[in-house]
Image 1 (cartoon, rainbow, N blue to C red):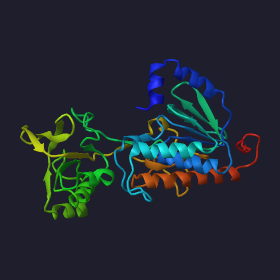
Image 2: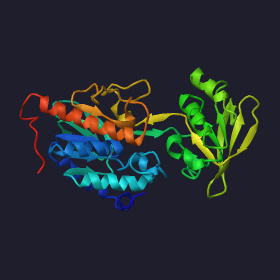
Image 3: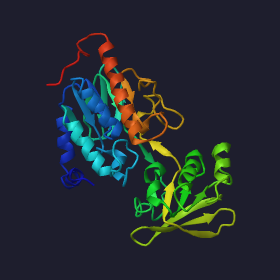
Image 4: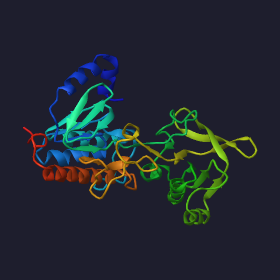
Length: 341
């Protein structure tokens, strides 16, 4: 938890005061919702156009703040999530961007001027919007998971896999993401145990064939994960129930990768913006959504491969798309672009 979050929890009047200030703000040319890599990138690209830019985020940095080690961010051999977020925040604030942190969007009202309602009761208005609210990992919701998060419990094999080189790990989930994770990890770790709740794996057959060809992978089906085990400092095992026999069994290992899907943060958009069957925002090549003037980027969209560097690229693209929308919109008193002071 950041110092800003701690102060907000201690001072009960913070939310009300912030809402009052936000409600008095002028219309933004571009408003970015979300403060992760996609949102930060969009804000920088927007501000560089010299237009009135704002960014509203529930927690600046998003999931990246919870990432222990990042070794696949091009241009730097290794960094840590909080360190990258700090650099992103400094970069954003080096431009004339109105950063509104600890604010959660609750509704979007389309129109020539788009209105964004916040949980605090305040509202913001903008001529264009970039939604970059990201996604969250679907969790196991079993004892020990939260206690050992980033202490052996991981959610991103691309990010954290190398940390478990030569160790025994488990992957929970037999869909495409789970099987792909097991194949990826098998090249780094000593042994992978893949656990699937159902009686058969759900991944594509071509992936299953590859998985079966690997000598250091064991597949257990009809396995319901019930507990993450540890020594107080790190993971040392897990417990699951064999659904066929009803027996409780244990595995000794040093890492658990949860691969049971992502949940896009789009609950507040249902009925407004077109969403896929998975709840992701549908976007075109420029990041445009089904609502004119509303763009989206990053893990919250249908764009594949949820990676930091991809989210950054998509954020800049969505901002450029939104700017293109602004300059091509019919001139009226409502949509005249105001250059930032």
